[in-house]
Structure formats: structure tokens, C-alpha cells
Image (cartoon, rainbow, N blue to C red; front, top):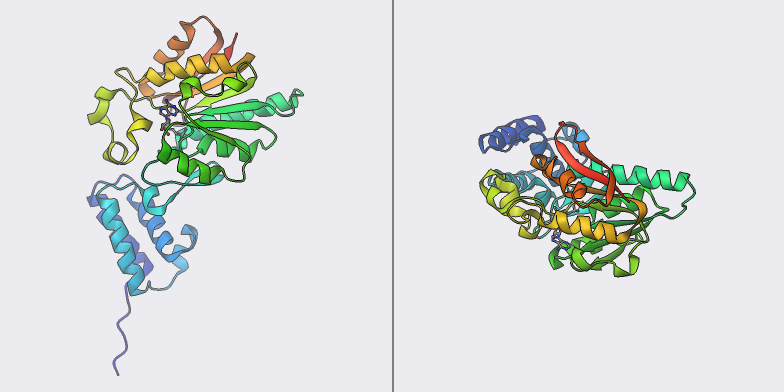
Length: 290
Ligand SMILES: C[S@@+](CC[C@H](N)C(=O)[O-])C[C@H]1O[C@@H](n2cnc3c(N)ncnc32)[C@H](O)[C@@H]1O
């Protein structure tokens, strides 16, 4: 009897997959090839090269996922999860995929909560406006378990993910429009965090295919200058915060001057400051309520 031909090694499978993704224009072909194969084989990515030759059914499943990634379906939709700081979130069609840049805003908020606690506020109140998958609220609940965390989201589809992601975290998740959210918390909140939609509707062509075809419309676009919901966030944050409370609001990299100006123009904020991300792009504005 003839011995069975050996299948391709893991290394060969990954090399071929990486070339296929690169040819299709995927911007991170090496890591995407690894993440997808690790997902199919149900092993940690760091242990991929320790595996033997993949079985034929695993190769078929991998091939199908690669084909979907080549037509720019987001990696996180194929995996069904996204990492955000120390939490893993369910994501998929209908909810915005949390971005690494937003981890900085969440970290800024967590640091402010830590300072408040160190100053004797044992259970500071924090609100996540436009929570989407619940990313910021989940990270805050994870890293500042002593805080009282509230979150709001308008999209029913996104809310379904947020409900799952925030189960057991103690976060008060509410359905509704940010404009009139949390009337019961007016003047009692220490920290407001928001990653609202902020892309100008005219910028459609400049937005990557993965984003404009797979992230929800409600998560992206926000009027002609991209600032319609940021203006609402400024008003709602002012209504919710205690005097001296702080707000952090993410924005597009082209809005590093306009968002601080928007806050300054109201004459009701001090210490208005814009923060850059690790790529040195303007990323979020913070301010203290007068
Ligand atoms: C850019 S996504 C950010 C989601 C999440 N905060 C994150 O960082 O991953 C913006 C979110 O705001 C929600 N949204 C848009 N308009 C809203 C409104 N008027 N009230 C409440 N949520 C809104 C969208 O559905 C979307 O989930």
C-alpha cells in the first residue's frame, strides 16, 4: 500500500495565505493569515508553528475564510471577536469594530477615575456615550471595578452586542439617543467618555472599503463637517458633569483643531487639550467643566 502524501506544512500554508491576502490588497497579510488559521485550528496564534500538517477539512475552512478576507470582509467579523485593552468583545455585522486608537481614550478615562478614587471619591460615576459594542464601558468596568459605569447606544443591532458584552459587568446599559440620555444623572457624573460617529458625509471615497462597507452607517457619518454628534456630546457632557468633571471625546485626525475650538467656543470648559495617538495623529479632545 502506498503511503499517503503528506499535506502542506503549517509554514507553507501560512506563506501561501499571506501572498494571497497581500495580492488582494489586505494591509496586514501576515498577521491576518495567522489569526485566521489559529481561529480554524482553535489554537493560540503563538502556537501555530507547533502544529502538525492541517487536516483537509481545516484547509477547506481556512480557504473559505481567506476568500472572504480577500474581498475585504473585516478580520474581526470572520473571527467574531475583537480585543480591546484587556477585554474580548463579540462583534459582527451591525456593530462598529472597536479600534486600537480608542484604547487610548478609555485609558485616559480609567486614569482619571483612579485619580478620583485616590482623592477620596470611592465610586466615581462615568458615562460612555455611543457605546457600540460596549467597548469603552467594558474596559472601564474591567480596570476600574469601583466605578459606577453607565452606557447608551441608539442602534438596536449594536445594542444586542453591547448587552452580551456587558453581561455580568455591572454596567448600566440603556437604549436611546445620546441627546436626551441619562436625565436622571444630570450634574452627578465625574467622567464622560465618547467615541461618536465623526466622519463627514462627503469623505466617503477616502474611507477604506472594509470600513464603509462593513461598519454600520450610524457609527460612521455625522453631517457635512463630521461634527454633528460631537456637538451633541459637548452639550450632553456639560449637562451630565459635576463642576470640575471631565470629558474625553474621540475625533478624526483632521479634527484636532476644530473639536477643541468647538468646546472653547461655548466658554464653559477649561483645560481644553487635544491628545495624539501612537502614530502622532490628533485623536481625542479632553476638557474640564467649569
Ligand atoms: C464610532 S462608533 C463607536 C462605538 C464604540 N464607542 C467604540 O469605540 O467602539 C459610534 C457609535 O455611536 C452610535 N450612535 C450614533 N448616533 C447615536 C445617537 N444619536 N445616540 C446614541 N448612539 C449613537 C452608533 O450606533 C455607534 O455604535
